[in-house]
Image (spheres, rainbow, N blue to C red):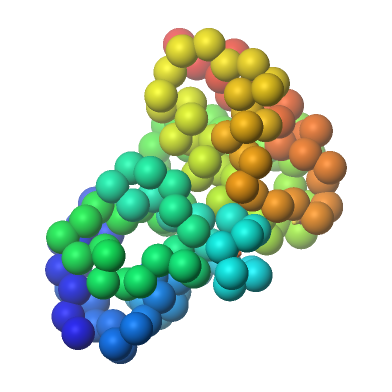
Length: 152
Ligand code: FES
Ligand code: FES
């Protein structure tokens, strides 16, 4: 099956086996920020943005991405807000093994882009689908709040 989609801002044609998951197709396309974790939709390591909304790509059929806009962390390398978020994660010591980090960054970026007030509760709610075994969440939450406070 051939899929035409916008992947990280580029019109892209990907080949997917019948029944393939978006996770596998994206990793085969070189998007290795999309991590393979639980593969049951529970950990958020495989999070990507599908038409702007966070989804767990391990439970999304690749066919759902046909004619869609898919964004992975690779597509936001030059985005100023993402760069600020990454700086804040580093400054807060919010990255340990790093396996959860792409997913956390994507959901945080999407939440910051929504604008408006942001409380610790909001950040924890936004990250509630992303499991982190290392940090205890306090530092990632602090990093997102720092990034928000630094927004113009
Ligand atoms: S690998 Fe997809 S939610 Fe865990
Ligand atoms: S930093 Fe290791 S799982 Fe989050």
